[in-house]
Image 1: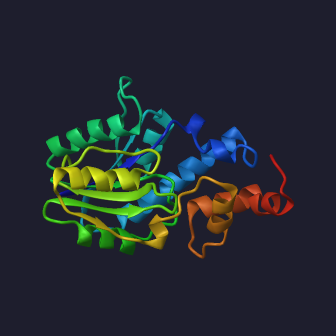
Image 2: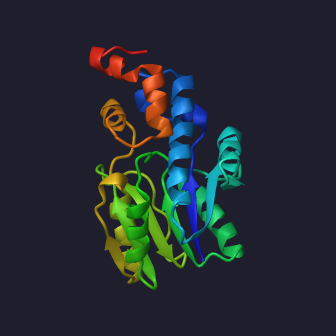
Length: 220
């Protein structure tokens, strides 16, 4: 049984690097829209037995449930994304998961076909991962779920590969465009606005007039 797991930050802290372009409320709305897009892509992958969001944010968890996903509240004792993922992963294993696909919540343009490719590459025991363009980890598949320790943070794709090597297990690396560009900077919004896909996040950016702000170089 393959379970998908999406970590989501506290919405009030979402996308701080976009603060000169978007207000706090707009950044919160964008984070929720991107989560909606990511969950829609995961729902289109038949091999996934479940899709779960782990977050300390009640609004993010409620949105996940409204979109048909499961939700796990991050324990107050968790210190960061890696502990939150470990907690949620253990719960999913208790529910019967023998493989895990972790997908970050700020990849709204992710294609279901690329998620299928990650699962196709997953070894019988080991990991498959897709680096982002800043050497983060866009997607990480693990079989079994605890085969390596989560190393999310700066240059996490490098750290995940090192962790696999230290444990002597295969690590297959894929380079997939829809999983390589997370949304952090204004230039990422330009890319998102240009996507031909009908995405909740791009619709929101159009509604907010973000294209005009970018063209004018105007802060909020």
